[in-house]
Image (cartoon, rainbow, N blue to C red; front, side):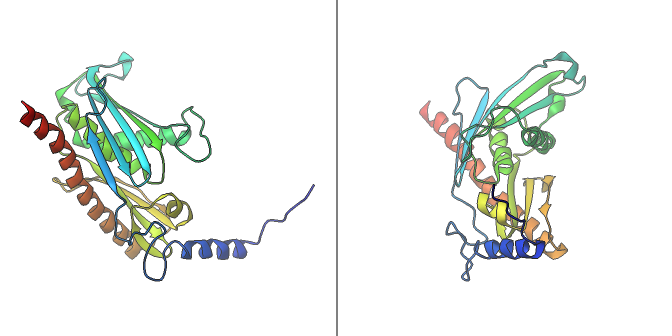
Length: 258
C-alpha cells in the first residue's frame, strides 16, 4: 500500500494561491470570458407548470432551476398553522443529476439549511397576514448546478410567487459577489466559488431598498466586504429588471391574445 504524506500547510496555501490567480487573467477576464462586474447570461420564464398555482424557470449561466408554488391553502400538518398569518413551507432540492458526481436524492443538511435561508429571504416580501391559518408551499428543484444556486433559487421563487397571484410588497431578487483571483467579482460560478477566497450572497427588495438576506463565506477585509455588497446589490437591480420583463412577457401577451 502506497502511503502519501500530507503537504505542509505553507505549501498547500501556495498551491491554492496559484489556482486562485488563474481564475482571472491579467486583463481582468474570468474563465468564462466575463469581466469582474458582469452577470452570467440569464433567462427567466413564468407559468411553465400547468399543475402548479405559480411557477418559474430560470437559467443563469449553467444553472437550471425550476420552481413550483402551491397555495395559499389549508396548512398540513395542522400544528404548523399560525392564527394570524400564513406560513411559507420551502423545499430546496438538488436533483441527483444536477452535479458532475451523482448526488443522493435524499435531502442533505445543506438542502435543509438552504430551504430555511430561502424561506426567510422570501417571507418579508409576502403579505402573510392576508391568509391566516394557511400555508404557501414553494418547491425549488435544481436541475443543473454551477454555483450561486441559493441566489438563483430565491430569484426564481419570487417570480413563481408573483405568478401564483400572491400579494407581495415587492419581488425579491438575489445575487452574490465574492473574491476570486484576488479581485472582487460578481455572480461567481462554481469554480470561482470553490477555489476563490470568499462569497457574499445578498437578497434585496429593490423598490423598498430592503435587504432580506446577507451572508458571507470566507475572509474579506472591511473594504472588500463593502465592495462585494455594493457589487451584489448592483447585480440584484439588473436581475430585478429581468424579473419584471419575464412577468410582463407572460401577462401582456395573454392580454393581447384576448
